[in-house]
Amino acid sequence: MVESTQQAPKRLLDVTDLRKYFPIKKGFLRKQVGAIRAVDDVSFFINEGETLGLVGESGCGKTTTSRCILRAVEPTSGQIMFRSTIGEEVDVAKLPSSQLRLLRREMQMIFQDPFSSLNPRMTLLDIVGEPLTNHNIGNRSEREDRVADALKLVGLRPEFMRRFPHAFSGGQRQRIGIARALVLRPRLIVADEPVSALDVSVQAQVLNLMLDLQEELDLTYLFVAHDLSVVKHISDRVAVMYVGKMVEVATSEELFAQPKHPYTSALLSSNPQPDPRTRSERVVLQGEVANPADPPLGCYFNPRCSYATDVCRSQPPQLTEISPNHFVSCHRAEELELPGVAMAKADGIG
Image (cartoon, rainbow, N blue to C red; front, side):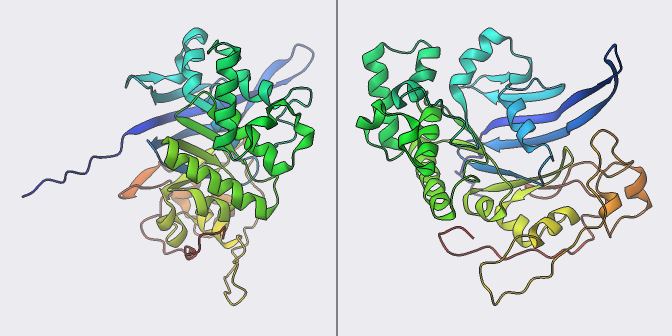
């Protein structure tokens, strides 16, 4: 038998049992009386060079998860294994500050709001060059050259570096934010809803720019979003969160066509279809989102799930691989046939 010469993809990031609890304090002495489980036992991985889309309702823990990975927020527990440039795996969650500073050259973030994320009193040279200054990379002339290169990468002219952010449109400002993230030449980019504040036409331009940069620079993305059309356009795999829990992870094509968790199916049905001739049955969830400070027993989704049984109300499900690269946290995942949506063939969003 001839062995395959194709190499298995290398994991750049491997998150295991990640938790982030925010304490609830009351009384004059500020005694802790509980905790908000913003991220509750989350596990996933990202292969080198791919895009993992992280989706879910507002407040489900997407942004907290992404900030824990960068240690912008201190995780309560769990492992965040990152494979550095030299091939060594390090646990970001346990790194001391001195070593974390060096690792942050390889992990950068693109923020959601291109207006508030840029200092209006700083020029583009100062904004994009700030990471270089903070890491003591090069002299001023060399930093100017690096900033000029970064601006050209995102489609902006180098002579713009003497201007201030107010002189640019929303789409251009987000390109500045992308340039700032790229100037250190990182390997992992965490994009926290990078196009949600932009017009739809500008969204497509920024998304296509990110795809081009990924191919050119061999970047890996964790793409946090709530817009499923955007996620479908850019992601290789998709992870779905609900009340701090990871409920399903699969390739984009499989997750959109054959979801295995009832919450994923309901989420997909809420996404409007671009073809007016296409009619889809909307799954309307009853009840309220579970309280992360006082979640229900068993599966957190069981009070809103029409497929829930006694085991769902008493035993929490585990994230299990039910088919190659398709992980689901549901007791009935293998027996349910749930509706999905067709993957779009067009190059644009939707």
